[in-house]
Length: 372
Image: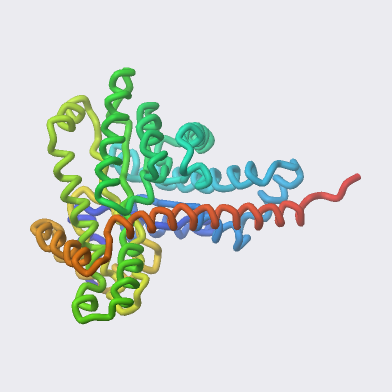
């Protein structure tokens, strides 16, 4: 069998797993994925934790202990999720050391209910970094308007950040600016820039889901011809923006001071439409110095039948721009779509978090020791 995952790694794409659970940690599955499937990082989000903890597998004893201590449901969730991230970080630590901090990382997200509160997001980022207490942690901050200054302030404190929920090219440029500004502030404070890392999570499949829905409503031949093209085009133009920013004089000054590039990370890479090849968002977004965080089903599909043909982004910018322009000509507003997706993204994570609060609270009540 050809090793598509190794070829992907050799092309400069870091393979991260978009999932985490206690069972995955304790069973040795995560260590196996690192050893055999070239996985070099892990991302989490509120939805992933909601599914993991609600399954109950491996969490009963800790929940019982937390119930006995009569902790709040918010504290219980933080203790459970940071424990999983800490244990995963320990498993990935050798990779972190071997890559000078570039990979071997685990991401944990700030409370999604804080997405529109800059000050609270920064405070939460500091708290999470302290709670997990591992150098190979990324704190995830959503790229909302309130999130941008929070990214700058968190980076300025020397805390590494995974910026999440990026859908638009304009917002992505603002994210890169927030990162560079944070590095400049950190340098002014005398911090070691070489210890600060960041990735920018640019969401992929959700773009096609929303735009394809609108194309299907139009129903014309022109509309049908554009199905499944928007997400890849959008991501490729994001990589073009990355190349521009990280070849600028401003960046060169920071790089000379020891700073690390903020790598583009392709998120939401599981294909939602079964009409598309299940490895679409892996094969079409191969480029140096990127990350692709995949659900396990996409990871295994890539291993089984992925076709890695080298750099799939270089030389595609003109066509990518033409594909997005063609959507505008059909009356599909790019700006409207990306705003809808950002709003929905925040709402979905908030909903998952609220579901997690409810299910955890029910478990704490069930396991609470009898009074007296």
